[in-house]
Length: 89
Image (cartoon, rainbow, N blue to C red):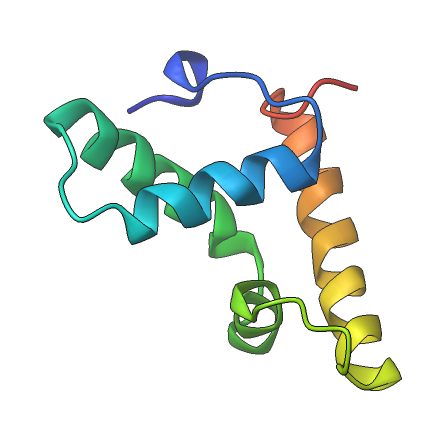
């Protein structure tokens, strides 16, 4: 799926919520599979540790360092997605 066919999200939180929902779906349509592949490709600009930080569940007991790394990775991804037109800016 080309970026032009991806929906435009209002925020990084909306993008990530949709990504996590698609990943957790027990059954996906072919269109959803293509969208999930395109969304995962967008994560390709992040390092492995940044992708892992974003994939972690948000918990109230997370340490400051865990939250810092997750928020930093989300900011980096947000800038990249805004530049690609995936997140409305």
